Image 1 (tube, helix red, strand yellow):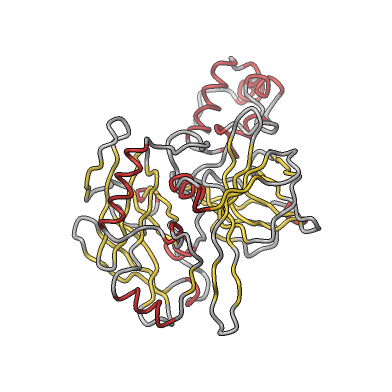
Image 2 (image 1 turned 135 degrees about the vertical axis):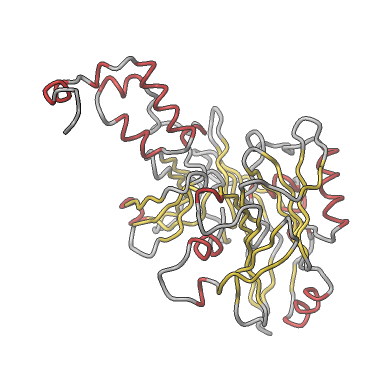
Length: 382
């Protein structure tokens, strides 16, 4: 009503005749914001639109990976509630293919690492938006998958970081040295590197750190830069626990002692809105550094703009656009810690005021519905 365009004209409009370059520009806009569901819907409109755009179903091309998307609720069978951390858009997605698999891990750019529920429990990598799937023939090693990454190339390869826990008679857990496994789709077994021989930055990248460029067999940064970063870790007594060569075995008393003397300091490396950040989570406060990707200079910062950072265990982290989430404060870092070793709380650290504030109880201590802060803080981040 009120339109000057006759209804008959609208009904007879031939949308399939849109110029191919215009269709591609629209499609590229969806890829730029990682709105892959919109991209797939666009290709489903007609044959000419499919011809004008690239088919993502048979390629590991990084353009089609669901970066920024994280699953925040999978309580319903085969159904996942996803959120785009860059745009704030929510999406509930049915994934019937998961009936025959366990979700073992996720890659930093949003791919699902699935384990077959039948022996020999081989792994597959699935893009839940495009349907792209890649199966790896090598059977699963007898260890827990800690993190994963898919390396694109002429022959895609999967990189898995494993850890193995051994129960002791005195009810303590001993963690064996971590190993990095790598295989191509047709490999009969994984090539194994002991963690103490693996490049530290590769190990950290496999644990969920976004770096510039693709993962490879060498460090993402020049050796001098790697040394600079690890010197910074040592200065703050924040070397990743994964750097230890020996098995780690810690009693509750030892854990409490390390907490009070500051051994719980952690270092997080991440990409946030195109910038490389080094975050030092200390027993008292936070220190954040930004790395210039051209000169590789480390600059101390107290402002990360509209971004908010969520920290998880094992040196994992995630950046979100706080402008898209009304309840999340910008220029803040969210994390979980225990006040009395029995109950976990979510805390927020404001980088400008350098003050810590308790936000709410952890998701394990509340009933549904949960807030977006509780959901994002509870994630086992990829």
